Image 1 (cartoon, rainbow, N blue to C red):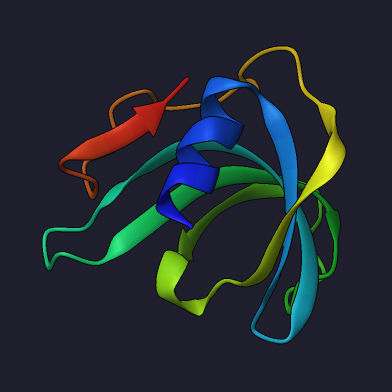
Image 2: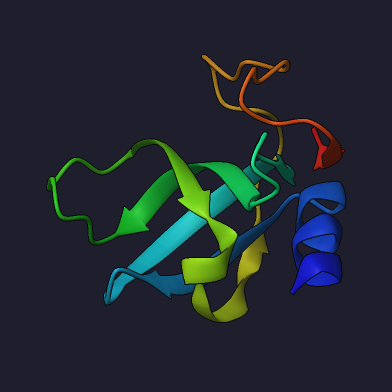
Length: 97
């Protein structure tokens, strides 16, 4: 999954996956590691479901909890407004826009 996330960010590809048993459609912006060593994905959830009911919105995903990742077959053109390029909870960063 590591290389799939890196490629999706580098190619600005929308991804889909299940997280907390809910289908998510996400524009991935940053993929890195937490201070505890856990892989994290920062992305803009543009579609799908969420427990809070708030879509679209920015979300931080624990990569270990992502299931059934696949490409949505569409691209996004640029970073969404509000994208913080330096995320304090991610170091090192493996890929980012």
